[in-house]
Length: 271
Image (cartoon, rainbow, N blue to C red; front, top):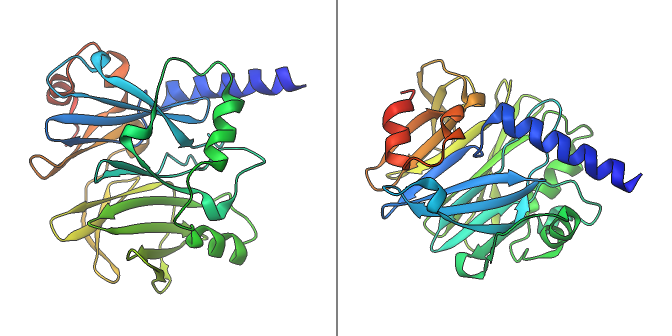
């Protein structure tokens, strides 16, 4: 039974990697380097490389966090890079997972280099128990107040020393802010959630972009700014912090990672 379960896990990992592209949700560019996450057997693998060099030349690291691939209501990996650390929410399928410690903040120089994940159970256990110094009270509160989690969607973004966690469930959105000491919770905003969304920080604001392309700025409440339809499910967001821009690239463009990221973006950008 254990071998069958691992086989099915491997099969669905391959299936979803094919349908959603090689990299998960977004790629961050900072100081001419790129940061991209590939999900392998639910575990995140962080690629760090130069934007002008072939992507395959990137150094890869195992993240003690990842995301499961739900058959419906796909939930990408929630992560960000800030102050030489990776911030991430562990959403893997593991009996040892604790919602309170699901938020990880790990220095990049503490990550283990990736060679292979032949035994995913080892890393799933590590993701469950490693680093949870900031209690993920937003998850605790969400699970306490909702019976069903099939339409749970979330993302996080860091801004200075603060962490914003956006959680949508049952067509409602709540925004949580970690100020370095405590969590504070926004009011509940109606939001018709059809699929996942992504958040990002730019200038002095935090933005939300829904899976259909609707963009909002969050200023104590979501304010719709623009709507330009495209399919984020098959796209990767390029968060370029060097030139302060957001672009989207067709996820299938990353099948060929022998090319530099700059070339892939130039040839495959959506908007």
